[in-house]
Length: 142
Image 1: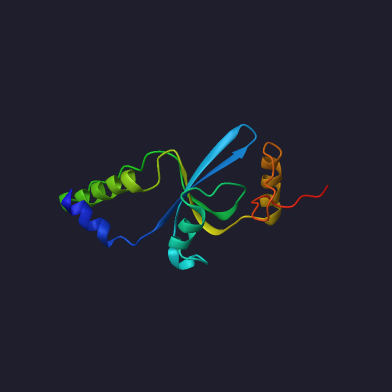
Image 2 (image 1 turned 60 degrees about the vertical axis):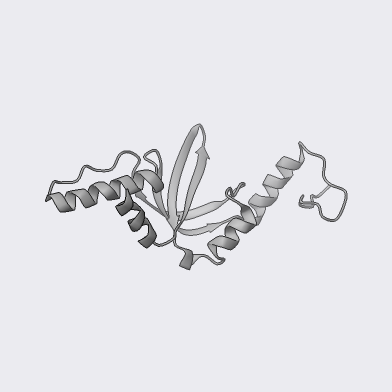
């Protein structure tokens, strides 16, 4: 356990994201580790701006590079390497991609303005818009 905590200290801080996509009656779950160096804002600012959940319509362009399911059983090489592989598998189980998620390497993640506006219009149908200028609703055409 202590060894695992020491390894975690050396792992670069990653931003992990889970995407849920619906197509007809099928739900796809994708998981990604996003490198902070490639964000246009810091991961801290991203969390402060959106919190833990980024709701709404988002577009993810990326490469699906890991399949759903348990990890492939590694070949037995020697006791030292086998223990390292076992530790890496345990690390994935703790903080990595869940077995029920596809792995994706994102190239671009963005919220199209049209998609954001449509989501706001749909949600405004069920709630009454605020009257002051601090309203969070987008203007709509009448």
